Length: 243
Image (cartoon, rainbow, N blue to C red; front, top):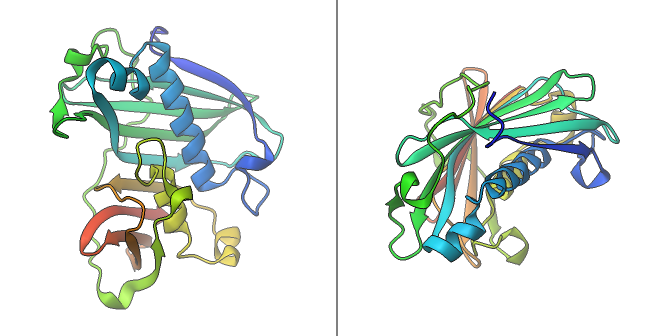
C-alpha cells in the first residue's frame, strides 16, 4: 500500500465518543472518521482550510457508507486509517478503517467527496487543486453506493428541529455528522440498545443554515429503516439503517 496519502492515528475511545451503550456511538464513529479524513487530507496539503486560502474552494462530502462489525467500548485502543482510493476528475472516494488493538477490523467506511468554488459553488477539477492522482492505495471497501427506493408521505413525519448554533460547523452550515444525530433521533434509546446498527449509508443533498427548520421523516422498507430530512420542501439529507 502506498503510504504518501495514508494517514493513521492511534485513539482511545473516550467518554466524549460514547453513546448510552458505553461503546462508540454511530454518529460518534462518523465524527471520528470525519476527523481522520480531515487530518489525512491535511497531511498532503489538500484539506479544506488550505484549499480555502489557496484556491478559494472547499470540500463537500456527498455520500458515505459504513459497515459496523463491532463497536469498540470505553477505553479501548483503536487505530483509524484513512486514504483516498481514486481521483475521478471531479470526485474522489476515501476509505477509512477502524481496527482493534489486535488487528480486527471493527468499522469500515467509504466516502465520496468533491471540491466546490466559494465564488460560484461549481465543481473544481481535483487536478487543478493539487489532489493526488497516481499511486493511490487499493480500496478496502467494495460496496457501491445505492439509489434509495423508499417513498415518504406526511404520515412518515416524526419531528422537526430548528437549526441553532450548536449544529453549525466552520462552513457556517449544519455539520454532516449532525444530520446523522438527527436521523438517529427517530428511534428510542431502548430500540437502539437492543438493535445495534450493522450498516448505514447517508447522502448529503443540500446545505442548511441557522434559523431554518428541518423536518425528519422515517419509513421502513425491505428490512431497512430509511430517514429523510427536509428544509421546507427541499431534501437535504437521506439515509438508511440496517440493524
